[in-house]
Length: 639
Image 1 (spheres, rainbow, N blue to C red):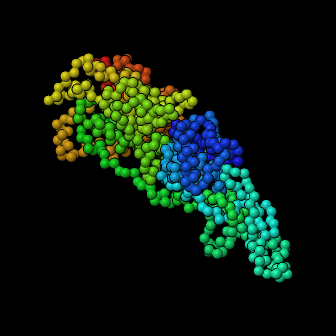
Image 2: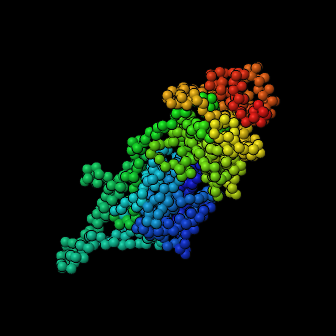
Image 3: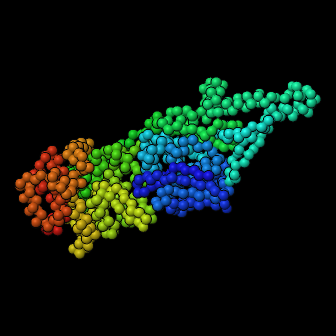
């Protein structure tokens, strides 16, 4: 007795199809799950056993073997519970499951048969669609998330019993007919099939008449001829086929369809026909998996969709700091990393937290990828709003660990750098982070992805983000602030030790290093009169969008979206320098002692500044502005 259903698991942020094979054989009652399951999957045996019994079914008293294929892929989580339970019921002949070869089953079972949500549903359903499956059964709490994948029928349930209806028709075919006796086979879970004999209505009438009449009268009036019995049996059998049942019910109930008819109607609508095996009779103890009432309507999904919540943050709230706002606009236009330096209270955090308000919206492909990451990490809570439409903004505390930032655990999950994919990773008070934590940012800042190696596999997570940081100029924070009350009390050794927490290779990867001074008296007067300075989020966003569109047009077909992604020959091909601009860059390279990485990043930044001004060629003024933004490089040389 063998059966196969489909479920799925996660590898990185991608879903992987898993075949749940079930085999029932004679032997001592036991359950074996093979195929590299983790402890959560091995414990599913007890959850499934209790759920099956509490749903009114019988757990087989046989040797049950469950294989999760491919067998060389490590699997974890509780998403296989529903597939294992349905596989056991279908293989032990307790249910009829039409269309199971095109069905994905996901969900964790409670002991009473209720379904609990699982993470990563979006990636699993997308993998099922690519694999050619057309339907998904999963917990109701995950249904709206799964519905984000088009072209798949979604059935959300809260309890396993919602799947079943009483068949009310015997599914087995009579093997032979004796006079007055109907003989058929019946499957009992855990036991071999057995032959059951049922006394027909004609035989009962014969015995009753024989008790009250003479033998002669019975022979004349009550004996039914063999021909009439044969025609009667043929009539009953023909009326109990699925087609005849559907016709009779339509005639009697004016179009009200039975579950059997619904399955047949569904088979007519779908490309792959769903067929019920054999004719149906009246004594079948099995139940039918009936899904049509559970189908999630796409119209209902659209009605539940909500618009993204409007943000009330705006750069118009920040008065003064025009040079910082321009630097942030350049960073957003080319996705360049930025670091703000300044004393406490100058608005560094306020400025960076408004950076998402000027970034371009996510494309459909980016939105699906970002939503998958949130789903895998278990952080996608509001599925009624559809795919994530705004770019992520992550701001972890400085006590974060390396696995928390980069991703980890025995089977790795996305870290903060992946949760910030296609968005912003903000590290406030950068030197307060442990140096070991900051150093792991080097590779994702260059490669835009994270590779985490484990004994059985290598996991890859996307990590294309804009790094934004802020820091004080010294431990006390008031170095060079000219504050009327607070004066810097830090020694040179303390300042050097404080800044040494940020290594040179990490600083090389930060394109803009901007000083944020205390607001002047003029800025305070302007803020009191609420006079805008022209740097509000709406106007800055328009400029950023135009600059981004210019980059998309230039790099069409080569897989690049932002100037910060240029490298190698693409960097040389798309950064044409005027003669004086080339001389200025070479002079700065020698005087500031820049590395080759820092030189390339100055080129990328100058390319974005030129795009901001709609210039095809990079001029000397663009190189000069790009060099000016590398404040820490200049301070190291006394510039």
